[in-house]
Image: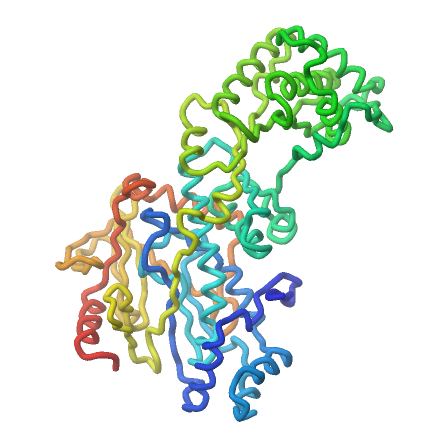
Length: 538
């Protein structure tokens, strides 16, 4: 397994969930006598995902857990010895055995922050050999978490604030860890709940789920419940034979809907009764196992009305096929008609849930004004991120021994920004995000109301900005291996993400052809980049 438990019994990534070249470089650093040189790396991405103009950062808590638990075990060292040259000095493996992250410092964007290209999500500093070894696990922990959180945020923007979104993609995910990560960070990105019970147990994600078609179709209608009696919700009064009550209601419902009493499927009705007996306070009907109009709906109404007589209220219906928007409209109309006919006003507002490979286009249709859909379950299209399967995060060296380092390459897009840096977010007078500024850590921080000349990335000329507010972006979370600031809870990070999105202008939140959010360099950082680009690395 690539996971193990930390000292608090929580799952963390193991150190050897990495690329072999991290170990070969470690040996190279050690042989060169450079293992303990002070170094700093930055983790960032180059392009916003999904053709959008923002990303949400996620995975910080997992990174901190990994770093605090980092130790190479005997079995790890034995394996590395088997894949490195046989004449490798045993002292190298003793060096690895002694490694922990007590010399590592991490600054990061708070989890749930808006993130933009080139702005560090993490800054990791410490001994060169060690912080090099951390590259792949940290990328693995941040990249997908941030991608799926961003995907979930986009889906939330499409759905609007009122529709409930359920993540149900575990069975479609890229393996157990992908499914677990998706459940956590789709919740951070704005989903209301998940079907994944492990995410609920280990990370506190609200879980939801009722029944599948297999439950419905497993019943033939000949089954006799071992105990058909149900007590009123108030616990006062005699128990009632629920199947008998349902059959009485079925006659009235079929007459109301213009159906023959034998049309609704008896096995489906038996399944609904069985579920209602098990969950009288949480009864939901899955309507499309046979026919929504001729079977699922009348069977649901018969059970819901029988429960209603006992003081229970059905919590909803679900559709999983067909034209979901149109069916929801028709069902809401029937609920209103039947509710009025039988003087059951609560029936009019029974939630309607839908699922069935819902993507951004179908979600927009289901969320349009006048839609009667209340709950939307999304699986494949949230967990697999089909529009873009990878965020493309990178982890690049920016300084060694206090001296800046730059990667030039043959591709200007892949050139890195040298030196230890600070990052700031400028806001306009209305409280909306204006610009992110990267500057050298040694520079004095910018001030609100101060005019600054900055160099937007990708621009040929500088521009002058005057922020109404200035916020530092990178916070110190781990200092010399010790937790410096308490990490927020998942719910706190989720709330922060929604708050952050509310400060982004609509032009930047557009999902198609959005305005590009500017990231700029200070004049001093721009001058350093220009100097090193001409001279090569120090």
